[in-house]
Length: 169
Image 1 (spheres, helix red, strand yellow):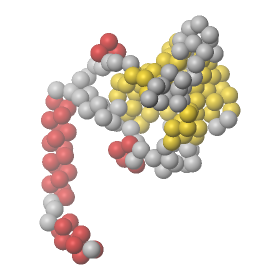
Image 2 (image 1 turned 45 degrees about the vertical axis):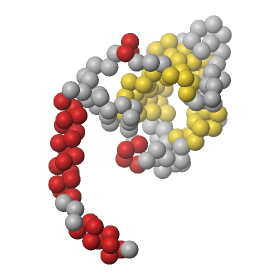
Image 3 (image 1 turned 120 degrees about the vertical axis):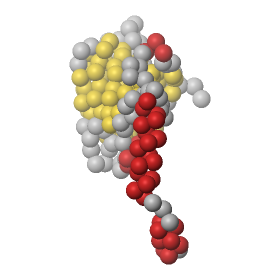
């Protein structure tokens, strides 16, 4: 098997593959979207709750694909799903007030705050809560797009641990 692999690899111009990838990326970027407008984006209900994706690994028509960027809305009195992931995410609270449970510790936040979720080798467990019974809470979040670099597990595992109440299979 090792010799078959070596023969197959010997038939490939790997430098040429990099140049071909460059050319495909340049072609893709030629007409890519520079400004992503929220009016043009649907809000989805998924296992984490209500989200609007601006930059995502499967969205290929934007100029930049090295970041994940989304808006999340938490309805009054509700919460996001609970997730374990690598961390390294920054949230900007744009509306409302609530708190984040990070590895069992409660961290309150309000509009205008920035929440830093640490990058940890064994990952972090996170869930966000809206403290208001009558107003939604919203934040935008950004993190590097590690999916294409180190797989979705990102070294720590990636598991949905609890679904948001609004999620319906």
